[in-house]
Amino acid sequence: MAQDITPSPPPAEPPSTGQPTGGGLAAMPAAGRPVREGIVLAAGIAAIIGSFMTWAKVSAPILGTMTVSGVDGSDGWITAAAGLVMAAYGGMRLRGQHMPVAAPILAGLAALGLLGVGVWKIVDLQSTEADMRARMSGEDDPLGLGKAMSAATQVSVGSGLWLLTFAGVVGAVAMVLIMIGRYRAVSE
Image (cartoon, rainbow, N blue to C red; front, side, top):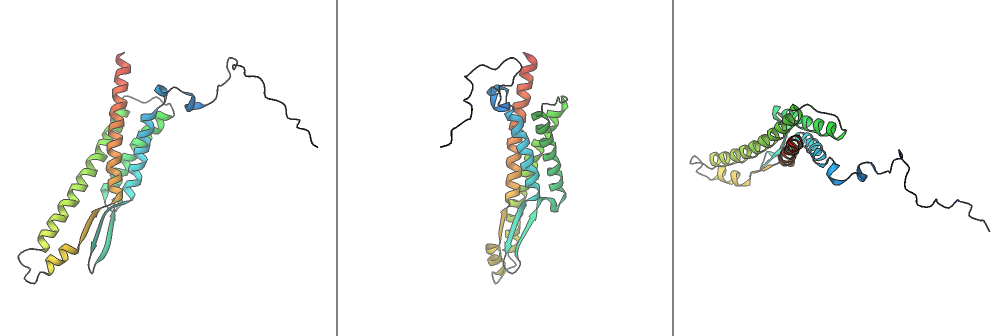
């Protein structure tokens, strides 16, 4: 029979001065964790991803299904840049780098811009769909073909546009909380 020759663990002793107690961010108290900055980083990454995803989908008889992503036009590149600003701010703050006063304001404006573009594009898409249906089923349609085509045509907001808008909302709320916390820390 083989004997177990592994040494027994040392008795529980408090760590000496200068030794790490382990844990990194997990060992930090909840108030010291940069959760809001992590949320801004995640929202920025989500905005970048959403900029490349589908923003609109149109399905029509005979024509088939067509999709449009954000980067098919200039708006998607602008939202990707705004997402990059938010992700850069969140990443640099998570690394503990000191940021100028204008950095959170710029990241907050980027988040509000994402929210604005997302809402604008969703409303514009729904308005365009209503206009298209009205034109297709107008008075110049004696046989009702336009009305039938209008009813069969499907226009929907793509997942990328929803993700972009959600990232704008979450990023804007997180940036407002960060700026309020920064203001409170300075005033105390």
